[in-house]
Amino acid sequence: MITWFVALATLVFATATLLPTLPFASGFVRVCDFPRLQIGAAAAGLLCLTVLFVPVSAVFWALVAIQAAVIATQAVVCLRFTPLHAKQSQPLRASEPTAGSVRILTANVKQSNRNYGRLIRQIEEHRPDILLLLEVDRPWLAGIARISTRYKHRLEQPQDNAYGLALYSRLELVEPEILFRVLDEVPSARALVVLPSGERFRLHVLHPEPPVPYEDTLGRDSEVILVARDVEADSLPAVVAGDLNDVAWSRTTRRFQRLSGLLDPRVGRGLYNTFDARYVFLRWPLDHLFHDKRFRLVAMRRLPDIGSDHFPMLFEIALTPRPAVDDAPGAPTADDRSEAREVTRGAAALDRKAIGSDWE
Image (cartoon, rainbow, N blue to C red; front, side, top):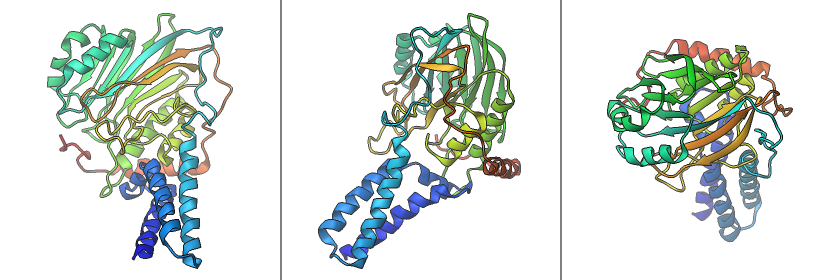
């Protein structure tokens, strides 16, 4: 019985390891991107169980080989997000000239969470230049009004379907706009941010649909592709931030980076898992900030719990005259562009409610 159990579990872990390599916009495939740490840890436990209880035979060695391959594959993927890997976002050197720095606090507040005070205390402590809030409804806007009104520039799109967003800035926002790129219920935001030096960068704010096993991921995948195309075509340096409902190492995120050319400050530093704040053993990096090569990283922190299922993130980046020499994401491949065309064509035909709009 133990051998059958180990064999079945090994097959499940091996399948979950291989599925994310497939170029399918299927929730069943894409959710396997998420638990790489958990699968690797479980496979290591299974390897111990195999060594202790499975009789040595051809089956034993096959199981050990598959389990070792699963552990190695998951470890290699996650290794990029440890200090053992080269940093993708370069740190700001003390002698390096800048056009100014910007501190950005991002938080998916969880619409049903009403602990406004926890978020307000963090805002008052860290005093971000730009505050980005997701899943806000009208009660949330009222609950944080005493702090949000301190920001001269505001863009608010409250909604009661867990896709509302709000953008507050001490820095000037030029042409701020709410966009509905794929689905009518899922907003994103875009604005020019003007630094005190007069230099500008383009800020994109995203919160696409989450992946679920029973539905496609065309809405999420298409939205990030459309933003990547905007960034690629734009002469201004760009920053993309928000809850992308995707992990930093996934096929779709890596493709987004190659299409946009933007850097991920997590690479070479750490996972900075932001979801799920409620469960220690089920956490992934879902809340992101990607930036142009002209930016350098000053600081990055995961902030304490605010009662949401996401931890907030605090980023400080500085705009410099020259791009970083490291071209870590690489150029987009022909397959990247072909897959991107297929995804956006499929998303253009979507006719359904946004996933998760009735979860809160």
